[in-house]
Length: 74
Image (tube, rainbow, N blue to C red):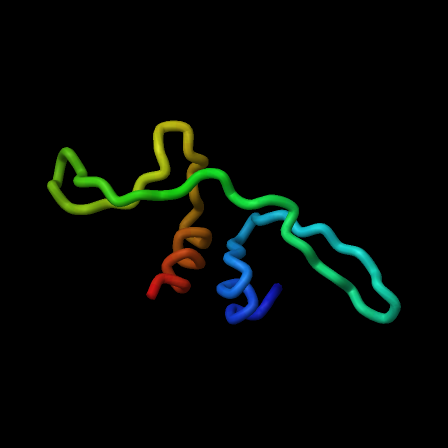
């Protein structure tokens, strides 16, 4: 697991793919590609409360993934 400060600086989240290579005595990790889907806040049609959505075809998140995302929320 990478420290939170590094994940924030690199905009990494659980499940992001990293490329690993060896350079001399170091292990270098590089994000494979940026996430293409961005979330947005909409008004929930049932409750009227603001909710975060990533669209109809967005993957379902586990509770742990949601907790990880929210832990990085300002």
